[in-house]
Length: 134
Image (cartoon, rainbow, N blue to C red; front, side, top):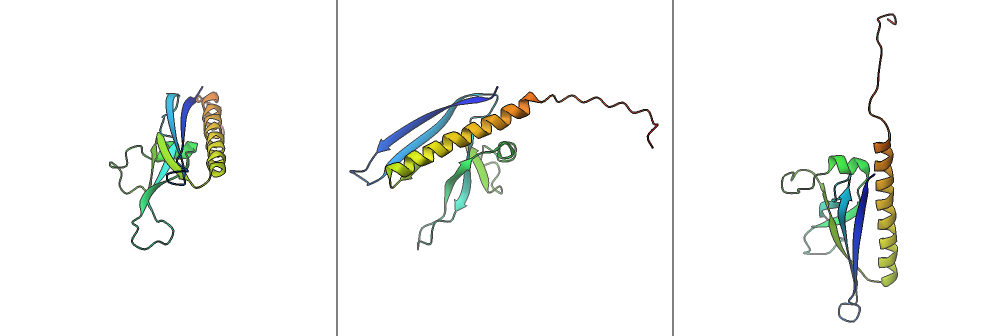
């Protein structure tokens, strides 16, 4: 059965930077790679002059992302997405941080549910061919 432990760290920087930081790390994976967070390369920011595009967290991976997106962004520079095991996020409000945390936990649960469903189906198939059906 696939499982992963999420280590969530929240940091209240509201007095210093007027922001709230959260890091989420996937660890202790079972039957799944820990790189479950999808990053988009050089995602363009909102229209801001002289701000270069930067890689940005987009979502929790789905089963197809787990198969198709690499975990080494350097080895596959032409693929616009890659996966990592930890993301660091910054929020303007505490409530948005809590809402995002709940959404990420729900999405990770959905990913694990889908993988566990796929692991529970047998892979073996027997077909008898006798040439009578032409």
